[in-house]
Structure formats: structure tokens, C-alpha cells
Image (cartoon, rainbow, N blue to C red; front, side, top):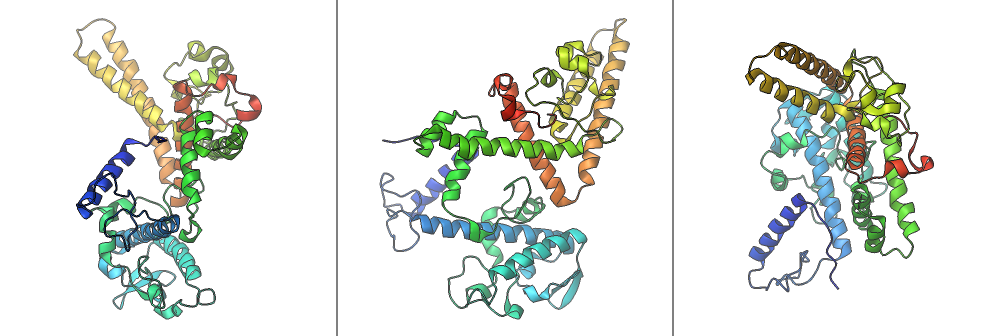
Length: 413
């Protein structure tokens, strides 16, 4: 029997484009016989499926190529050296603070130095002559060896060609430079790098099932898709991973709570507290507000001016929404007919907009002052917390009925 598995719209678009390319590559083969992932060799009709080992090998090579793209993009932005020239650099041409390209030394900024040193340590470990008999001498190892070179004595001595990055898009250097560290982008909260050699086929299955749990899919459906005989196996494997990830995210953000003046504030509110979530930005510790919800707050929708208020980077979208609400209300009132209350209402809204904007500026300044790796860790933590918060708001998670041992207290959301 066929089982239809959910995928998002972007993945569906990629699959549709992939199928169109396959039909062009194998025009004589009926679509009903065409393999979605045909084996690349000895398969003239495209009907033979690629094996799991082939997929794992291909994916490891692609991840290595993405890693190279990120490092090259940062070096290109830092030195203005053309991508083609960077592709032909040897690992031996990298110094502590300098990069030698075509006989000329280029000064590297600190961020590029750290990224390149991290990448270079992994590269040399993967091509250590003591571990791999075909590894080239250190003075002949390319800084960016081609991941797709044929295996053999000269595979690690082949430089990656710039055309290999064409599949990433025309503006791939600008996009790749947005990632603060090489490795698989967004892999985990710690922004730790993933070695391509550690990627296995089973990780695809685990990642997909974890995404389903994170998205709020029924645990019984996930257990059925995972073919688990006991649903407790699914809970132990995926639900507890999600809870631990949420705890780590909240602990991370708890270090970055600030008030309107940009001063640090730390909170320890139970995650299961329903009243605490009624506050606009979900970070209030005032006893009356916790008892009565937003109805008991004199600063409703103006939390920024309350002595008990603080926010962290996960609140940025909420604050941006408040600012946009103020702007829309101001525009409506300014075009409305004159009355005695109009000046007062405009003054209140403009003061509210200014307060939220100041809070937003403080948070952005906080993020801008972090090291790239730490900023990536904080932003990923904020993404995890926002995802959970959105599920609570939409009714996808019954936090009020959850056991305290499962969810709280792990910090303010």
C-alpha cells in the first residue's frame, strides 16, 4: 500500500523541478517506470534506483561542497579575491593571519581567521597521511579539494572547480556568506560543525521524524510512520529530544533578557503558567499580571515601560508586530475626522511606538555585539522557543494540562 508523507511547499517545488529534469534526461522512459533517484552509472533508461550507500556518499559530498562554499564566500567577502583564484589555493598557503593567493599575501580579518582555522583543522584531519594511504603530502593538499573527484590516489589532489557551485544559484556567494560557521547550516543549537564523514543514511529518517514531532504531528502517527511497535519508543526517541532542546534554548535565552535600558534581567517562570503567556511579549514577572493575565496590567500593550518587563531575542517578531500595529493605528487616526480625543490618542500611540522601537533597538544591538558563532546559537535558540510559543498560541500544545515534571520550570518564554 502507498503511504503519503507530508512535505512543505518548498520541498514539493524542488521535487517537481527534479522530476521535470528527470523526464528531460530520460525522455524515452515512461514516468511510471522512472526511478525518482536513478543510479548514476550503468542505468541508461533511469529505471534502476540508487542504493542507500550511493545516496549517503552523494549527500556527504554535497555537504562538503556546501561547507567549502561558506568558507569561500567569507574569504571572497573579506579579501575581494575572485572565487576562481580561491579555488586554486593550497592548504599550505594559509598563515595565522594571512592568505597567500597567486604569490600575494592578503590580510584576513579575525572572523575569517577563526573560520578558516576551524575548517583547516577538519580538512587536515580528513586527509591525514597517517590515516589515509592516498592522502597527499601537506604541501600538496588543496585548501578546497573537489568532493566529487574519482576515488583513488589523486582524488584529494584535485582542486574544486568554480562551476561546481553553479547549482547553488547565481548569487550563492552572498547567500553562503550569511552563515556564520561552516558545516551543515542550522544543524543544532550549539552551531557545532558536522563532519561529512559522520553522515549516515539513517540520519535522514531520524531528522524527518524529529521534524514531524517538532511540528506537532500526533505521536501515534509518528510511531506508525517509524514502524515502532510501542509508542513509548517514539516518545523516548523524539519527544524527549524535543523537550531537552527546548530546555537548552530557554537556558540560552535566559542569559540575554534585557529591559528597556538594555540592562540584563533574568527570569525563572514556569513554562506551564497560562497567565504568563497572556502578556503581549510573554516575559512578565509582575504577581498581579501572573494572577489576572493582561486584564490586570495597567501597562497593557506597553510592557516596555513596566519595571518588571524584559525581553530576549525570541520576542523580536512580537515587538515588530506591536510597532506595525502602532503605525497602522496612527495612520488611521491621522486620516480620521478631528475630535477632542484625537491628539491624546495619537500621543499615546506614538509614545508606545517609540517605546517598542527602543526595545527592538536594544535587542538588535545586543545581537550585533555577539561573536558570529554565539549569535547563531542565540538565534537558533530563539527559533526553537518561538516555534513552541506559536504552537501554544494556536492550541497545538495543551500546556495547561501538561505535567510540571515534563515542561516547567525552565525559564521565561
